[in-house]
Amino acid sequence: MSRRHSASATGPNRQLLLLFSVVFMDMVGFGFILPILPDYVERFGGTPTLVGLLMAVYALGQFLAAPVLGRLSDRFGRRPVFLISVAGSMVSMAILGLAHSVPMLFVSRIVGGLSGGNVTVAQSYVADVTDEEGRARGLGFIGAAFGMGFILGPLFGGILVNFGFPVPAFVASGLSALNLLLVATSLPESLPKSARGGSSTSRRQSSVALAVATLRSEPAASLLIVVFLYGLAFTMFEMIFSLFVQQRLGLSPQARSYILAYIGVLIALVQGGGIGMLTRRFSERILIFASSAVMTVSLAFWAFSSSTLYLVIVLAPLSVAAGIMMTLLRSLLSKAVPKEDVGGVLGVSNSLDSLNRIVSPAIGGFLIGRFATWSPGVLAAIILAAVTLYIWLRIVRAEAAPAAESLPG
Image (cartoon, rainbow, N blue to C red; front, side, top):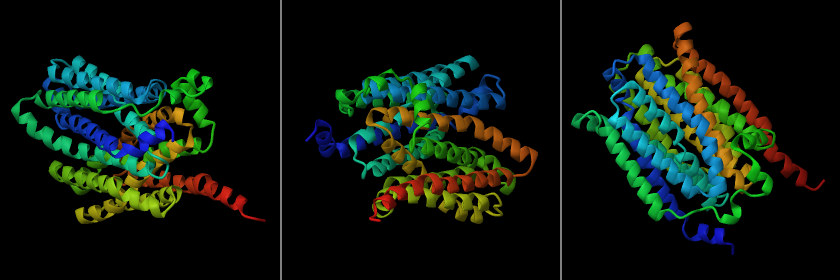
Protein backbone atom coordinates (compact mmCIF):
# COMPACT_ATOMS: atom_id res chain seq x y z
CA MET A 1 0.00 0.00 0.00
CA SER A 2 1.39 3.42 -0.98
CA ARG A 3 2.03 6.17 1.51
CA ARG A 4 -0.58 8.38 -0.15
CA HIS A 5 -3.24 5.67 -0.20
CA SER A 6 -2.60 4.85 3.42
CA ALA A 7 -2.96 8.48 4.45
CA SER A 8 -6.13 8.75 2.45
CA ALA A 9 -7.57 5.64 4.07
CA THR A 10 -6.86 6.59 7.67
CA GLY A 11 -7.34 10.32 7.92
CA PRO A 12 -9.49 11.92 5.21
CA ASN A 13 -12.51 12.56 7.42
CA ARG A 14 -10.46 14.41 10.05
CA GLN A 15 -8.68 16.39 7.34
CA LEU A 16 -11.97 17.27 5.63
CA LEU A 17 -13.43 18.47 8.94
CA LEU A 18 -10.39 20.68 9.48
CA LEU A 19 -10.61 22.05 5.94
CA PHE A 20 -14.32 22.69 6.49
CA SER A 21 -13.48 24.70 9.62
CA VAL A 22 -10.75 26.72 7.87
CA VAL A 23 -12.84 27.56 4.78
CA PHE A 24 -15.94 28.26 6.89
CA MET A 25 -14.12 30.69 9.19
CA ASP A 26 -12.41 32.34 6.23
CA MET A 27 -15.75 32.97 4.52
CA VAL A 28 -17.37 34.17 7.76
CA GLY A 29 -14.54 36.69 8.10
CA PHE A 30 -14.90 37.76 4.47
CA GLY A 31 -18.66 38.10 4.93
CA PHE A 32 -18.20 40.34 7.97
CA ILE A 33 -17.08 43.24 5.82
CA LEU A 34 -19.52 42.91 2.89
CA PRO A 35 -22.41 44.85 4.51
CA ILE A 36 -20.14 47.67 5.70
CA LEU A 37 -17.94 48.20 2.63
CA PRO A 38 -20.26 50.90 1.20
CA ASP A 39 -20.15 52.67 4.59
CA TYR A 40 -16.34 52.58 4.58
CA VAL A 41 -16.30 54.28 1.20
CA GLU A 42 -18.90 56.86 2.27
CA ARG A 43 -16.91 57.53 5.44
CA PHE A 44 -13.95 58.66 3.35
CA GLY A 45 -16.05 60.69 0.90
CA GLY A 46 -16.18 58.10 -1.87
CA THR A 47 -19.02 57.40 -4.32
CA PRO A 48 -21.04 54.22 -5.04
CA THR A 49 -18.90 53.78 -8.16
CA LEU A 50 -15.91 53.42 -5.86
CA VAL A 51 -17.63 50.51 -4.07
CA GLY A 52 -17.90 48.72 -7.41
CA LEU A 53 -14.23 49.41 -8.14
CA LEU A 54 -13.19 47.98 -4.76
CA MET A 55 -15.10 44.78 -5.51
CA ALA A 56 -13.64 44.68 -9.01
CA VAL A 57 -10.00 44.97 -7.84
CA TYR A 58 -10.60 42.15 -5.34
CA ALA A 59 -11.99 39.93 -8.12
CA LEU A 60 -9.12 40.98 -10.41
CA GLY A 61 -6.59 40.00 -7.74
CA GLN A 62 -8.22 36.57 -7.44
CA PHE A 63 -8.30 36.21 -11.22
CA LEU A 64 -4.54 36.77 -11.41
CA ALA A 65 -3.54 34.86 -8.28
CA ALA A 66 -5.75 31.75 -8.22
CA PRO A 67 -3.95 29.80 -10.99
CA VAL A 68 -0.54 30.88 -9.66
CA LEU A 69 -1.30 29.74 -6.10
CA GLY A 70 -2.78 26.51 -7.40
CA ARG A 71 0.32 25.86 -9.50
CA LEU A 72 2.63 26.68 -6.59
CA SER A 73 0.74 24.15 -4.46
CA ASP A 74 1.45 21.53 -7.15
CA ARG A 75 5.16 22.28 -6.92
CA PHE A 76 5.74 22.91 -3.21
CA GLY A 77 2.79 21.22 -1.49
CA ARG A 78 -0.65 22.42 -0.35
CA ARG A 79 0.27 23.32 3.23
CA PRO A 80 2.87 26.09 2.63
CA VAL A 81 0.67 27.80 0.02
CA PHE A 82 -2.30 27.50 2.37
CA LEU A 83 -0.25 29.23 5.07
CA ILE A 84 0.73 32.07 2.71
CA SER A 85 -2.85 32.55 1.55
CA VAL A 86 -4.32 32.61 5.07
CA ALA A 87 -1.59 35.00 6.24
CA GLY A 88 -2.44 37.32 3.34
CA SER A 89 -6.11 37.33 4.36
CA MET A 90 -5.11 38.17 7.93
CA VAL A 91 -2.99 41.12 6.79
CA SER A 92 -5.66 42.31 4.37
CA MET A 93 -8.34 42.48 7.07
CA ALA A 94 -5.96 44.19 9.51
CA ILE A 95 -5.22 46.90 6.91
CA LEU A 96 -8.97 47.36 6.40
CA GLY A 97 -9.50 47.81 10.14
CA LEU A 98 -6.71 50.40 10.28
CA ALA A 99 -7.79 52.17 7.07
CA HIS A 100 -8.07 55.95 7.25
CA SER A 101 -8.21 56.71 3.53
CA VAL A 102 -9.51 55.36 0.23
CA PRO A 103 -6.03 54.23 -0.95
CA MET A 104 -5.75 52.01 2.16
CA LEU A 105 -9.09 50.44 1.27
CA PHE A 106 -7.72 49.60 -2.17
CA VAL A 107 -4.51 48.17 -0.69
CA SER A 108 -6.59 45.97 1.63
CA ARG A 109 -8.78 44.65 -1.20
CA ILE A 110 -5.83 44.06 -3.55
CA VAL A 111 -3.89 42.13 -0.88
CA GLY A 112 -7.05 40.15 -0.08
CA GLY A 113 -7.64 39.30 -3.72
CA LEU A 114 -4.05 38.26 -4.38
CA SER A 115 -4.03 35.99 -1.32
CA GLY A 116 -7.55 34.66 -1.89
CA GLY A 117 -6.46 31.20 -2.98
CA ASN A 118 -7.78 29.33 0.06
CA VAL A 119 -10.59 27.63 -1.82
CA THR A 120 -8.34 26.54 -4.71
CA VAL A 121 -5.82 24.99 -2.32
CA ALA A 122 -8.61 23.41 -0.23
CA GLN A 123 -10.12 21.84 -3.37
CA SER A 124 -6.69 20.54 -4.38
CA TYR A 125 -6.20 19.10 -0.89
CA VAL A 126 -9.52 17.26 -1.19
CA ALA A 127 -8.39 15.79 -4.52
CA ASP A 128 -5.23 14.53 -2.78
CA VAL A 129 -6.97 12.76 0.11
CA THR A 130 -10.03 11.29 -1.66
CA ASP A 131 -10.42 8.63 -4.33
CA GLU A 132 -12.47 9.28 -7.46
CA GLU A 133 -15.64 7.86 -5.93
CA GLY A 134 -15.44 10.13 -2.88
CA ARG A 135 -14.19 13.22 -4.72
CA ALA A 136 -17.60 14.83 -5.32
CA ARG A 137 -18.64 14.33 -1.69
CA GLY A 138 -15.42 15.88 -0.41
CA LEU A 139 -15.65 18.88 -2.73
CA GLY A 140 -19.31 19.28 -1.81
CA PHE A 141 -18.27 19.42 1.85
CA ILE A 142 -15.90 22.31 1.08
CA GLY A 143 -18.58 24.02 -1.00
CA ALA A 144 -21.01 23.76 1.93
CA ALA A 145 -18.44 25.41 4.23
CA PHE A 146 -18.01 28.21 1.69
CA GLY A 147 -21.76 28.74 1.41
CA MET A 148 -22.55 28.58 5.13
CA GLY A 149 -19.75 31.00 5.94
CA PHE A 150 -20.99 33.39 3.28
CA ILE A 151 -24.50 33.25 4.76
CA LEU A 152 -23.52 33.78 8.40
CA GLY A 153 -20.71 36.30 7.80
CA PRO A 154 -22.87 39.29 6.77
CA LEU A 155 -25.31 38.55 9.60
CA PHE A 156 -22.63 38.67 12.32
CA GLY A 157 -20.82 41.53 10.59
CA GLY A 158 -23.96 43.65 10.93
CA ILE A 159 -23.99 42.87 14.67
CA LEU A 160 -20.26 43.49 15.25
CA VAL A 161 -20.32 46.93 13.62
CA ASN A 162 -22.45 48.12 16.56
CA PHE A 163 -19.34 47.82 18.75
CA GLY A 164 -17.26 50.05 16.50
CA PHE A 165 -16.77 50.60 12.80
CA PRO A 166 -13.42 48.75 12.43
CA VAL A 167 -14.45 45.86 14.72
CA PRO A 168 -15.72 43.45 11.98
CA ALA A 169 -12.45 43.82 10.04
CA PHE A 170 -10.31 43.21 13.15
CA VAL A 171 -12.41 40.18 14.16
CA ALA A 172 -12.05 38.85 10.59
CA SER A 173 -8.28 39.31 10.88
CA GLY A 174 -8.38 37.43 14.18
CA LEU A 175 -10.27 34.54 12.57
CA SER A 176 -7.61 34.39 9.86
CA ALA A 177 -4.93 34.28 12.59
CA LEU A 178 -6.78 31.35 14.18
CA ASN A 179 -6.93 29.65 10.78
CA LEU A 180 -3.20 30.21 10.37
CA LEU A 181 -2.60 28.50 13.72
CA LEU A 182 -4.88 25.57 12.80
CA VAL A 183 -3.15 25.00 9.47
CA ALA A 184 0.33 25.36 10.99
CA THR A 185 -0.27 22.95 13.87
CA SER A 186 -2.95 20.50 12.75
CA LEU A 187 -3.13 20.18 8.96
CA PRO A 188 -0.65 17.65 7.52
CA GLU A 189 0.72 17.95 4.01
CA SER A 190 -1.45 16.00 1.57
CA LEU A 191 0.84 15.94 -1.48
CA PRO A 192 3.84 13.61 -1.17
CA LYS A 193 7.21 14.97 -2.32
CA SER A 194 7.27 12.37 -5.09
CA ALA A 195 4.12 13.92 -6.62
CA ARG A 196 5.17 17.57 -6.45
CA GLY A 197 5.80 19.03 -9.88
CA GLY A 198 5.43 15.70 -11.69
CA SER A 199 7.63 15.25 -14.73
CA SER A 200 10.42 17.63 -15.69
CA THR A 201 8.15 19.09 -18.37
CA SER A 202 5.40 19.74 -15.82
CA ARG A 203 7.86 21.42 -13.44
CA ARG A 204 8.85 23.89 -16.13
CA GLN A 205 5.27 24.89 -16.91
CA SER A 206 4.04 28.15 -15.45
CA SER A 207 0.39 28.61 -14.52
CA VAL A 208 -0.18 30.36 -17.87
CA ALA A 209 1.52 27.56 -19.81
CA LEU A 210 -0.52 24.99 -17.89
CA ALA A 211 -3.73 26.87 -18.72
CA VAL A 212 -2.86 26.92 -22.42
CA ALA A 213 -1.92 23.23 -22.40
CA THR A 214 -5.14 22.35 -20.56
CA LEU A 215 -7.26 24.26 -23.09
CA ARG A 216 -5.74 22.09 -25.83
CA SER A 217 -6.49 18.76 -24.16
CA GLU A 218 -9.70 16.85 -23.61
CA PRO A 219 -11.76 16.42 -21.52
CA ALA A 220 -10.35 19.26 -19.40
CA ALA A 221 -10.79 21.81 -22.21
CA SER A 222 -14.51 21.06 -22.58
CA LEU A 223 -15.00 21.20 -18.82
CA LEU A 224 -13.28 24.61 -18.54
CA ILE A 225 -15.47 25.97 -21.35
CA VAL A 226 -18.52 24.80 -19.37
CA VAL A 227 -17.10 26.32 -16.15
CA PHE A 228 -16.69 29.69 -17.86
CA LEU A 229 -20.07 29.82 -19.64
CA TYR A 230 -22.00 28.38 -16.69
CA GLY A 231 -20.22 30.87 -14.41
CA LEU A 232 -21.08 33.75 -16.74
CA ALA A 233 -24.80 32.88 -16.56
CA PHE A 234 -24.97 32.07 -12.83
CA THR A 235 -22.83 35.03 -11.75
CA MET A 236 -25.06 37.34 -13.78
CA PHE A 237 -28.01 36.00 -11.79
CA GLU A 238 -26.12 36.19 -8.50
CA MET A 239 -24.62 39.66 -8.87
CA ILE A 240 -27.69 41.32 -10.37
CA PHE A 241 -30.23 39.60 -8.10
CA SER A 242 -30.63 42.40 -5.53
CA LEU A 243 -31.10 45.05 -8.23
CA PHE A 244 -33.54 42.77 -10.07
CA VAL A 245 -35.85 42.13 -7.09
CA GLN A 246 -35.63 45.76 -5.99
CA GLN A 247 -36.80 47.05 -9.37
CA ARG A 248 -39.19 44.24 -10.37
CA LEU A 249 -40.79 43.34 -7.02
CA GLY A 250 -39.90 46.32 -4.81
CA LEU A 251 -38.38 44.13 -2.08
CA SER A 252 -36.69 45.80 0.89
CA PRO A 253 -33.00 45.20 1.72
CA GLN A 254 -34.06 42.94 4.62
CA ALA A 255 -36.31 40.84 2.36
CA ARG A 256 -33.51 40.58 -0.19
CA SER A 257 -31.07 39.35 2.46
CA TYR A 258 -33.54 36.68 3.61
CA ILE A 259 -34.00 35.37 0.07
CA LEU A 260 -30.25 35.34 -0.54
CA ALA A 261 -29.82 33.37 2.69
CA TYR A 262 -32.54 30.96 1.46
CA ILE A 263 -30.56 30.41 -1.77
CA GLY A 264 -27.35 29.89 0.18
CA VAL A 265 -28.93 27.37 2.56
CA LEU A 266 -30.32 25.30 -0.34
CA ILE A 267 -26.93 25.27 -2.08
CA ALA A 268 -25.12 24.36 1.15
CA LEU A 269 -27.57 21.51 1.88
CA VAL A 270 -27.17 19.89 -1.52
CA GLN A 271 -23.38 20.30 -1.42
CA GLY A 272 -23.05 19.11 2.16
CA GLY A 273 -25.18 15.97 1.88
CA GLY A 274 -27.11 15.60 -1.34
CA ILE A 275 -24.10 15.27 -3.64
CA GLY A 276 -22.89 12.05 -2.04
CA MET A 277 -26.28 10.37 -2.39
CA LEU A 278 -26.76 11.52 -5.99
CA THR A 279 -23.31 10.43 -7.22
CA ARG A 280 -23.85 6.95 -5.79
CA ARG A 281 -26.86 6.54 -8.08
CA PHE A 282 -26.06 8.60 -11.18
CA SER A 283 -23.06 9.44 -13.37
CA GLU A 284 -21.49 12.82 -12.60
CA ARG A 285 -21.77 13.79 -16.27
CA ILE A 286 -25.49 12.97 -16.39
CA LEU A 287 -26.02 14.99 -13.20
CA ILE A 288 -24.23 17.99 -14.72
CA PHE A 289 -26.34 17.73 -17.87
CA ALA A 290 -29.60 17.48 -15.90
CA SER A 291 -28.61 20.35 -13.59
CA SER A 292 -27.76 22.59 -16.53
CA ALA A 293 -31.16 21.83 -18.11
CA VAL A 294 -32.99 22.57 -14.84
CA MET A 295 -31.10 25.85 -14.41
CA THR A 296 -31.92 26.90 -17.98
CA VAL A 297 -35.66 26.56 -17.34
CA SER A 298 -35.45 28.06 -13.84
CA LEU A 299 -33.56 31.17 -15.02
CA ALA A 300 -36.13 31.74 -17.77
CA PHE A 301 -38.95 31.59 -15.21
CA TRP A 302 -36.96 33.76 -12.76
CA ALA A 303 -36.68 36.49 -15.39
CA PHE A 304 -40.46 36.98 -15.32
CA SER A 305 -41.03 36.75 -11.54
CA SER A 306 -44.37 38.33 -10.64
CA SER A 307 -44.50 37.88 -6.85
CA THR A 308 -42.35 36.93 -3.87
CA LEU A 309 -44.02 33.51 -3.60
CA TYR A 310 -43.40 32.84 -7.31
CA LEU A 311 -39.77 33.89 -6.82
CA VAL A 312 -39.22 31.60 -3.82
CA ILE A 313 -40.69 28.61 -5.70
CA VAL A 314 -38.57 29.20 -8.82
CA LEU A 315 -35.38 29.66 -6.80
CA ALA A 316 -35.61 26.20 -5.20
CA PRO A 317 -34.74 24.08 -8.29
CA LEU A 318 -32.33 26.77 -9.49
CA SER A 319 -30.37 26.70 -6.21
CA VAL A 320 -30.24 22.90 -5.98
CA ALA A 321 -29.06 22.62 -9.60
CA ALA A 322 -26.42 25.31 -9.00
CA GLY A 323 -25.06 23.45 -5.96
CA ILE A 324 -24.71 20.27 -8.02
CA MET A 325 -23.06 22.04 -10.97
CA MET A 326 -20.54 23.94 -8.82
CA THR A 327 -19.34 20.77 -7.11
CA LEU A 328 -19.34 18.24 -9.93
CA LEU A 329 -17.57 20.48 -12.45
CA ARG A 330 -14.62 20.71 -10.01
CA SER A 331 -14.79 17.00 -9.31
CA LEU A 332 -14.58 16.11 -13.02
CA LEU A 333 -11.81 18.66 -13.60
CA SER A 334 -9.68 17.17 -10.83
CA LYS A 335 -9.99 13.75 -12.51
CA ALA A 336 -9.30 15.05 -16.03
CA VAL A 337 -5.63 16.00 -15.45
CA PRO A 338 -2.57 14.29 -13.94
CA LYS A 339 -2.33 14.49 -10.13
CA GLU A 340 0.62 16.87 -10.32
CA ASP A 341 -1.52 19.42 -12.21
CA VAL A 342 -4.69 19.33 -10.09
CA GLY A 343 -3.92 22.53 -8.16
CA GLY A 344 -3.08 24.42 -11.31
CA VAL A 345 -6.21 23.43 -13.23
CA LEU A 346 -8.49 24.13 -10.24
CA GLY A 347 -6.76 27.51 -9.96
CA VAL A 348 -7.55 28.21 -13.63
CA SER A 349 -11.16 27.25 -12.95
CA ASN A 350 -11.43 29.61 -9.96
CA SER A 351 -9.68 32.32 -11.98
CA LEU A 352 -12.45 32.04 -14.59
CA ASP A 353 -14.98 32.48 -11.78
CA SER A 354 -13.22 35.68 -10.71
CA LEU A 355 -13.25 36.94 -14.31
CA ASN A 356 -16.99 36.36 -14.43
CA ARG A 357 -17.44 38.37 -11.23
CA ILE A 358 -15.88 41.30 -13.08
CA VAL A 359 -17.74 40.88 -16.38
CA SER A 360 -21.21 39.62 -15.41
CA PRO A 361 -22.37 42.53 -13.19
CA ALA A 362 -21.46 45.00 -15.94
CA ILE A 363 -23.44 43.03 -18.55
CA GLY A 364 -26.42 42.53 -16.24
CA GLY A 365 -26.53 46.16 -15.14
CA PHE A 366 -26.32 47.35 -18.76
CA LEU A 367 -29.17 45.04 -19.83
CA ILE A 368 -31.49 46.20 -17.02
CA GLY A 369 -30.70 49.85 -17.73
CA ARG A 370 -30.96 49.56 -21.51
CA PHE A 371 -33.80 47.05 -21.95
CA ALA A 372 -35.84 45.63 -19.04
CA THR A 373 -35.56 43.78 -15.72
CA TRP A 374 -36.19 40.43 -17.43
CA SER A 375 -33.31 40.75 -19.92
CA PRO A 376 -30.40 39.43 -17.73
CA GLY A 377 -32.42 36.32 -16.85
CA VAL A 378 -33.32 35.66 -20.48
CA LEU A 379 -29.70 36.06 -21.59
CA ALA A 380 -28.50 33.78 -18.78
CA ALA A 381 -31.09 31.16 -19.82
CA ILE A 382 -29.98 31.37 -23.46
CA ILE A 383 -26.34 30.91 -22.45
CA LEU A 384 -27.19 27.89 -20.30
CA ALA A 385 -29.35 26.37 -23.05
CA ALA A 386 -26.27 26.42 -25.28
CA VAL A 387 -24.18 25.02 -22.41
CA THR A 388 -26.66 22.17 -21.90
CA LEU A 389 -26.41 21.18 -25.55
CA TYR A 390 -22.61 21.43 -25.40
CA ILE A 391 -22.51 19.22 -22.27
CA TRP A 392 -24.57 16.56 -24.04
CA LEU A 393 -22.44 16.58 -27.18
CA ARG A 394 -18.93 16.94 -25.70
CA ILE A 395 -19.15 15.49 -22.18
CA VAL A 396 -22.05 13.02 -21.86
CA ARG A 397 -21.60 11.44 -25.29
CA ALA A 398 -17.82 11.37 -24.75
CA GLU A 399 -18.43 9.20 -21.68
CA ALA A 400 -20.78 6.91 -23.56
CA ALA A 401 -18.50 6.46 -26.59
CA PRO A 402 -15.73 4.38 -24.90
CA ALA A 403 -18.38 2.12 -23.36
CA ALA A 404 -20.00 1.57 -26.76
CA GLU A 405 -16.61 0.85 -28.35
CA SER A 406 -15.87 -1.79 -25.71
CA LEU A 407 -19.02 -3.79 -26.51
CA PRO A 408 -18.46 -6.92 -28.61
CA GLY A 409 -19.24 -6.34 -32.24
